[in-house]
Structures are given as C-alpha cells and as structure tokens.
Image 1 (cartoon, rainbow, N blue to C red):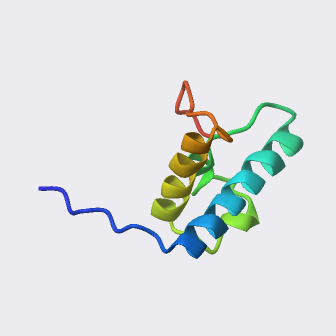
Image 2: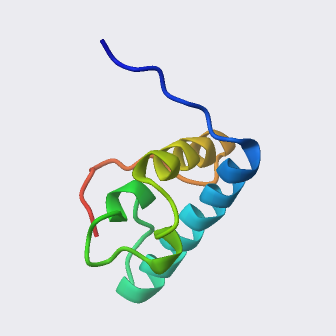
Length: 81
C-alpha cells in the first residue's frame, strides 16, 4: 500500500518551484534545446546547482504545481538531459 504523500509547506513549495523553473531555463540555455522536465534532471550530469537543496519529491511536487499554473509542460517523452 502506498504511503500518503506529505504536502509541502507553501513557502517551500514556492522555493522549489522557483528552483525548478530556473533549472529548466538554465539547462535550455546551456544545451540550446527546449526546457527539460526538472525532476528528470536530478541525478544526471546536467543537474543544475539550484536543485541541490531539494529532494526529488519536492521538485516533482513543484513541477506538478507549475504544470497546473500553465508555466511548465508535462514532458511528452520522459528522457533526461
């Protein structure tokens, strides 16, 4: 049985969302390609430093939040950078 997901504190969610957007922009600038889905960057050689203070779960929640706001698109193919 799956454990219930703990909701982030609103301030932490906003901080993680800011880091996720920054990661997407920085990676696109460095690679010359489109924005990558921030959780897909975690643990790769392309992981931006701005994600270092966050867990994968926090960045996943922040990315889903940004998708609901229309600021980020859900990836069509789940490939990493």
